[in-house]
Amino acid sequence: MIIDLPSTTTSQVNRKMVELRERGGAVALGRVLTLVIVDDDGEHLEEHIDAANEASREHPCRVIVLARGSRTAAARIDAQIRVGGDAGASEVIILRLYGPLASQGQSAVIPLLLPDAPIVAWWPSSGPKVPAQDPIGELAQRRITDSAAERNPIRALAARRKAYVPGDTDLAWTRLTNWRAQLVAALDLPPYEKVTGATVTGEADSPSTELLAGWLAEYLKVPVRRVKTTTAQGIVSVELERRSGAIALHRPDGKVGTLMQPGQPTRRIALHRRNTKDCLIEELRRLDPDEVFEASLQGLDKLASGSAGAAKKKAPAKKPAKSAKASA
Image (cartoon, rainbow, N blue to C red; front, side, top):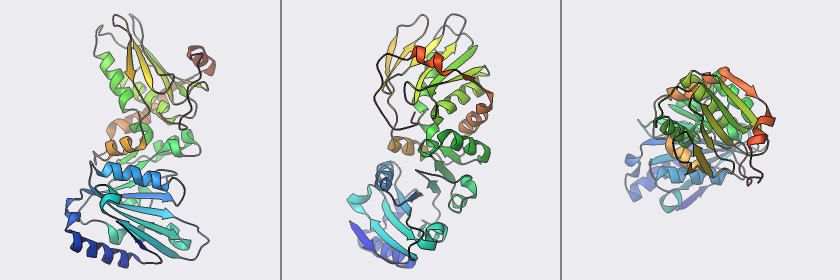
C-alpha cells in the first residue's frame, strides 16, 4: 500500500503512521532498527529503496528516506508512506525535501524515529566528508558510505580514512568479504609458510582494491605493492609470495576467479561482484565498530605503487564485460 501526502509536515506523517498502526496492528514493535537513507531525489533513488526493502527481510526496520530535491524551489515536504507488499518487511517513509528544507533533514527525521531502536545512516551516493559530524550521522550508531559511488573514489576513500570514527563503514569494504574469505582459506592449507610479500592488481579508481591491499599490509606485516591497470575493472588479482611459490587468485572477468597455489590443484571459484543489497544486508548485521575496517584504512599508508604495465602483461587477451565503475 502506498499513501501520498503532498505538501505535508512531519506531524501529519507521524499521525498517519499511528493510524496505519492502529488499523493493521502494532507492527513497529517488530522493527529492530531505523535505517535513514540520505540521497538526492534522482533516477537511482528507487534502486536504493529497493535494496533497503530487500535488506529489511533479514533486518525488519523502519526505512526513512530523505530525498533532497531542488534547493531553489519553495520550501515544502512531499511525503510518501509505503507499507505491506510495497515495503518488504519494513515500513518506508519517503520525505522529499525542497528549498531550504533540503539541508535540514535532521529536524524532519527526529519525529519519525522508532523509540529505543538503533539508528543506521546510509549515504548510497555522495556522502559527507565527515559522516560522524553530519547532522544525520550524529544521530546514528552506524554510518554507511560508498566511496565507489563518489565522483573521485580514491580521494573519497582518503577522506574516509582521515575522518574515521568508530561506527563508520564503507560498502567498498563490504564488497571484499568473499576475496578475504578465499585468501584466508588458502593460507590455511599446506605448506604453512610465511608470506613474504604481496601484489594486488586492480582498476586505478577502485577503492575496494585499495582496501584489500591495505588489509594485507596491516595484517600480514609484509611489503604490499598496489598495481593499477586499465585493462579490467574492479579487483583483478592478488598474489601472496611464499618460499615454495605464490598463492595467486585471478579474476579478470569480474565473475569467476582462479586460485593457484603450490601442491594444490587449480580451482575455479565463483567470485562475482557483490550487489548493493547483499552488502547492505551484511552491514546491518552488526552495530558495533568494525576494527578490521579501521585497521585496513591505516594500512593504506604502507602501500607501494606498481606500474600499470606490469598489470597489463598479466591481463587476458579477451576484454572483460563492462560493469559498474569502481566496484569490487
